[in-house]
Image: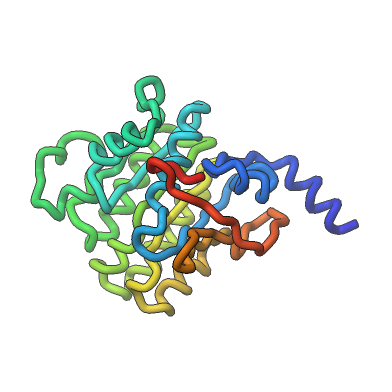
Length: 241
């Protein structure tokens, strides 16, 4: 009886396309609204590809996507998405980028264009820019992507770091029917730090590689009945399938 009630409540939720059909099916249609999901996995496993695919699949449906990229410039992300076969021509306006990359190259060309982080150590400035981007674009029913949180963990002082993630997650949740995807690298940080950050989130999607196959599993997902079984996936021409 309790399970039937949970399933009925799940059907009332707005759910966001994960970008992968079999994961949508496992999660009763996709990621649940008003939630923040951590994407955990080693470098190169496919987290960034997953983020780009989720961004595109939601953007083509008219969903606004705020995309904070730290591992590549916005121009590089857009070019990679096009190489993957994601046609952004009619949907590019739905993806708003925050450039968290160009500072490391000493690039100043984008300082007066769009949203730009000057470095990864000033966490207060990062929150201000994220809040401004959300406010400027009247963010509702949207998707917020941070790829990757690892740059904040590497460069920022630990003392304010967890407060930063608390505020970031709260800002995402404050926007009606919006979700967040935050990637973080496994094997690069103190396990306690990663555990603390993931504890703050509503969901956790873990990417793994067993030497032959890539797979992911849902360790937790708020407001969702799901299996803990792993799902195999491949990276085919950049796409996660």
